[in-house]
Length: 386
Image (cartoon, rainbow, N blue to C red; front, side, top):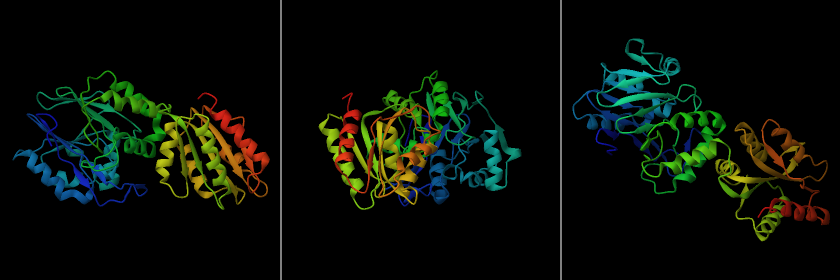
């Protein structure tokens, strides 16, 4: 695939993978992106997963057209992008590696080799001339590893964005970008919103016409849409108006309360109500929804003097990612000594800018007149602005 006259795509599609990073369900596989910049000197942008060595080297040889690369630019050391560094260096013994100092330390850890005699260490603002193409390196620590750099090509106005602006799915998958990019972002990058904001500020001064991420499609139209979503996600803003109810239920009584609440919210004019059964849904999608919408209801049972395991996992994901700027309501159920609300609030204590509803629901085994009235009050409070 030709991206510009001088930049070509040499990555691969992985259609066999079932779990990305050992945890994220990827029904449409993954793309591992790599690019070639051809000029007086030739630069290769990142390698691919170890399962695709031969395919990637074949793509590279074809794109080279008999020439030899001068540089391998390593933007990110996660193995799905760096596994073929040694293969590349063996295949092209005259090439040099360009990367951050922390990346070379990681190369030592992964491969036992820092390539001291064949390396160029770059930092924020450093440049590399290939001829008419001048590459500027942008330090992007913790987006989402500490060694990450991005690369801007001033000639073609292309940003090589490392894992930023990536998504799940192969390149030939026809699906909405935002859905799988959002799930990817909040699952993998979401903890590092402050760092993403700093990088977006750096990028704002650049004339970017194309974004080439390490996963997902090349973006070359309506870039304000993609950067705008990243700004919303990384600032923990509300992307969509609506209410998410995430719940667990043992014998169906908590589920019954959730179903009733969902109907009341819709009847009260809530623009969108999303209900996630945490025992059955994709946990990553549930996390995605929690960050997407402005209001979140957590409904669960007291369980072993704690909360039900799927809810504990879910709340841990929210806390680890520093969820904020949300309104949170709680429904707890317990046949004796209910304390789920207390446990969940304690788990979220470190999260900033959360507001809790005045009305919450306490169910003692099953809904009764009192807890049903609490459901009414909660529905009214959540929908007061709609």
